Image (tube, rainbow, N blue to C red):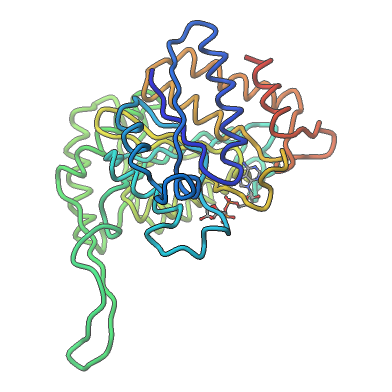
Length: 354
Ligand code: NAD
């Protein structure tokens, strides 16, 4: 298992250090893991004058999976757009053809009160949003600015999906649903958009290949409401790029803690880039207070989805559940009566629990 490790900026290196300790522990217990570190984001710019240096691209291409911390920071905000850290992230997703973005939203029993919703609505929530990542209105051509006949400026973008793009993301969704509770909800806007009408037709067609999965469809406006009304009705949600962008952020807030949520972006061969959903948190960087659990859970997702090492994946996930049950909390998830720990001490607790 060759893993390209890209710590990035801000808290990236601190949280990645703890994830590397988890990987070292698994390696010591017999998993054939090899890690190589590369620079991305501001760190890439500092090292090679590029947020995605050639060496990093080569490293990521050779690896079976990529583990990423976070990129960005105020120091780089003055750079021209192409040199900004975030461009490194967008480019690596593109270079690797990562079209399937998995965003779980899990509410651990001990943290249910951190949600902005009532505890009983979110307790036990375990939801997976699968977002298509390389198509839709974010990439559709033509796009741009032009003048109307009356001489007024207008901006325009093109929403589009081809049948093959919908088919490949739908298959990933059905595969995931088969491994979970076999319920899949496809979200679109088929009452208004032609792109969505095609989306619905193709997803329905693919469902014939997966008779054990129960497929439902929902309009995106209703899905946005249902996510805050009764989120536990969902198990796997499949949707396109723009709807998924919005719904996955909404779902992450149901859990109340940005420092707890991992994500995966995968290609057709399930090679993936695994990263926490949060950014580089410059406000707390270098202070040993960042929560490393989202990054450690990203390792768990990597073991499950790219390497199919289910036992090791569950070992890491159980260790995280166990440290929460033992009362360890970083500042972002601290509650009265719990034991406040720093980034490294949270890593220590996870390693002990493993
Ligand atoms: P952010 O996610 O970095 O931080 C938002 C808030 O959450 C901050 O108060 C931060 O302290 C807190 N936070 C984030 N992660 C945490 C953790 N692990 N533990 C404890 N608290 C945590 O978002 P932002 O402040 O909007 O952006 C900061 C920088 O990160 C910007 O340069 C932005 O472009 C970049 N960014 C990068 C990514 C990425 O690398 N995937 C994603 C979002 C933002």
